[in-house]
Length: 89
Image (cartoon, rainbow, N blue to C red):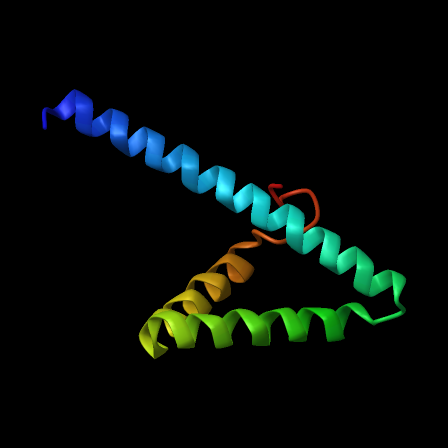
């Protein structure tokens, strides 16, 4: 595979990954809104979402992958990535 073709495949992979990410964000946003409408506090929704996510990561990819995700999320929090106005949806 030549460099131009490899670059094109990488671009397509990145676009597919971003589309999947946006679909996941939309699904999670809907679930979050449903939880709030049901009177569930945001902290409880967040904890349940994190427990589900890390449980699935452990099951599918093992402890190393789950811990790597936790590290990435921690670094994003420290960097301010989740501050109002900085979230990308």
